[in-house]
Length: 415
Picture 1 (spheres, one colour):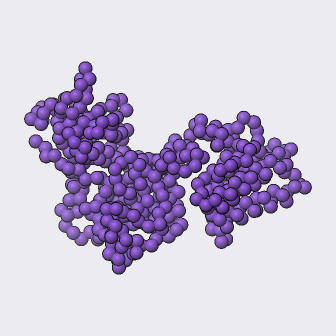
Picture 2 (tube, rainbow, N blue to C red):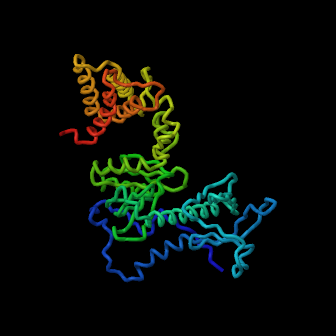
Picture 3 (tube, rainbow, N blue to C red):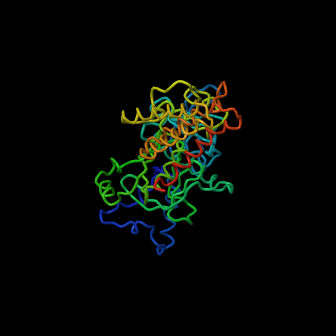
């Protein structure tokens, strides 16, 4: 008989983490040198495997005539098997569910019911209580994530998008980790040479935000100590659908933070109800990796418009910035609608200089300008629009302006 192992979240590594004292230095956060015995080094791996095993009774919906039947389930080595009773474990299981990378585990309708979708079949399972159901969901989701990670790391063509030493904070505990973003998986290791990760986060089910300070209800006092000791730029990764706490990443400088913030946002699911309607449409496009055939590109907000906008395309909390954003869109419209010829070249130069200088002076306006250029240079229009010139080759001008503006804002403004 297999014991009923209470799962520990694979994404969390609280047992191996430690809190930072207020007078700690960053160097003291480095992973310890491997001078301990081999049995000590192997124990975390065995513990991680145990955290991905579970057994117990669940009620399963099935049979020729759909009805609920109590079955004994055993989760081991990434496979969920079930029998009529725990006394039948020496026999062949009644069925098995292989938890590969395409599986999705989620709570279904009903307080104690959850669903396993394999792509070919959906399984509905009910636990005796909500805490037991939540334990099963957590450990099953962790198994699916681990299997997806193994497949991801085994692919030779999959190269990391970003990798660096970062300070990770979760549940008020902090540790310096080797962090890797590969595909849509954020993975962290003790050292760059480690094969088994300490944990991972599937970014497709998260939203990413820049945070001014760490707010962790699990340990407010420790979080305050971390904040005092580590005033560096910070990013928060917040799960959307999984009942887990946020993961914070602390960076050595602003440039490193901005680089990670952009890449993590690109692969994250985001908050589907956050931001302006334009931002929500962009988020949906990002979820589909910017599929050029998506109908979202033909949405009126994403295509060229002769009419001025009444609200900014991106989010602003200040009414003053909202007004400036609307003027910025008008500048783009004028730049594209006025005939470009030798006598009027100065007009276009001044328009472009003023718009770009405004965005350099007020960095919050840069996403608004880029959004306006994306919208006004969209190829998904009913009629050809653009700068009205006699030479057809000059229609490339707005796109080159978009490209140059993007490059400009990614450079150091002081130079």
